[in-house]
Image (cartoon, rainbow, N blue to C red; front, side, top):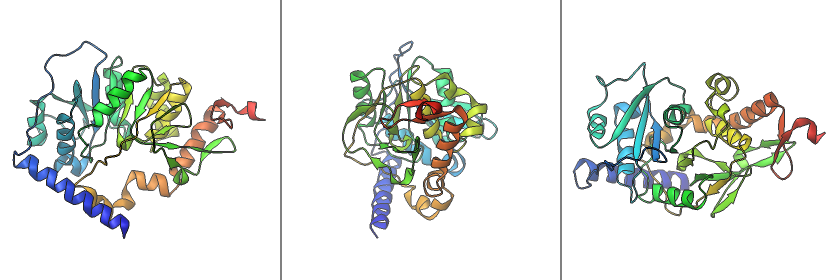
Length: 299
């Protein structure tokens, strides 16, 4: 019952936001025209299918444009075999005049959210967001302020604490979420849904090896990026956010959650399986303190 009420609240809030935008009661500002050469804060996201066609992603991008501290740039990565300037929905075309860059690229499932932007802008801070979320106005500000305090850290607004079992991060569905600001290393697992900020060179170069992640971890980009952050020994910074984001797409997702990637990953133990596959392939484990070690070191 509680979950149904939360979905209803989410939908009402999301549709109210949609109405305010469509009625022009909310203005849509443009991104700053003065551009830094590098060290910029760039928001990167991807979308697909009905979320592009019905403009679900449009409202997510509008919420980023309306931030209290807007990013320097926004990149929407779309499958180049399906989308081009000729068939891009009019609402998204309008946002290009506000500073949105549409990058037509290879479809890499959820990895498309980060990898193309990471390759194109290696010396900038990349902030990944989802295409079905209307973000609160302080989202980018919180991430950038955290990054200013810990410039080399991967900063996130949503993270879990892995459970270590026999050297693996296991039982994903039982991981507890962090409920306060926390700085640490491997026992912080950033969750992409809330927004994650990646500083330049914070992930091992393995992160961009598409053949490898398609083979070992095709459905869990969060797992792959967490592992590549561990390889680089990158600090993590959790910034707890009290206000919740919302989505007018929540009703559709509620009735189609059996087909959602996050649902299958969590409840069919796909994250557990893919963590084990990655660890076994590279012959590594986590020790009791959460440090990544060679498998032989635990024997």
